Image (cartoon, rainbow, N blue to C red; front, top):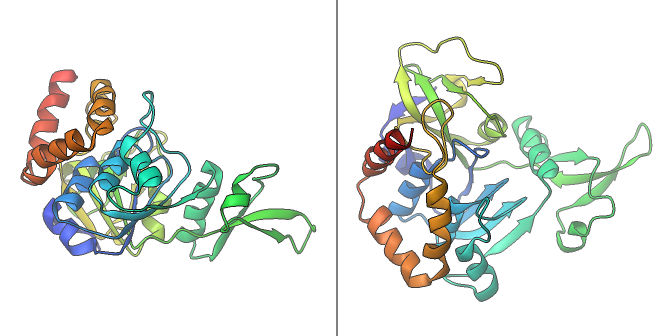
Length: 286
């Protein structure tokens, strides 16, 4: 059953050096505040998993927290490259980074297989693609019923999954509204999970269409972190900060400017500073 704790406690209790860590959220509800707390607590040797790694993973890679990453697309959405990611791959700075690239479909199916406690996922995909030539974890299986040859990929089973959501009740049940990606599957596939939320309420209102509820028994820790997805957006709460994504391109190009930004905005910040500052910026932008 989920425990409602502080963000620092949630990360301290659930994220360990060497873990496989998934931080999911599709276009919105990206768990920035939780990712920053992982950096602040100095976690190392993490194997990062995310369908669409963007700025948050650029930051984790840039501080040297990651030993590798499994993903299906990586970039600064609408802007360009992730410069810290590229520097790690091309120049091994601040450390070498192991990468395993998949298609979106393969990642989604792999999460679903993990949630179902299956060893691998099968899909119709990768036909004529080059990824199997460079990724030894893309294999094939023959259907015992039809003889059809299908692609197969290992199930994703994170040590810990971290997501952001709109609301949780006091029992730890979590409501996610708006665009839903693979958050549910990523949580169910993980040994442990952290959910940061905009609000903790006495009871969850009837969910809107295309929403989902994660029951308390599926969640390890819930932390109240208003603004915890900023600069991504939280449907119904605040918009995306396009200016931040554009500004990040310049910050991340240079190692020194990146390191200075991390020191000022992450390492020297208190755990609740993110919520206060992000929440106020989001309110002004709304």
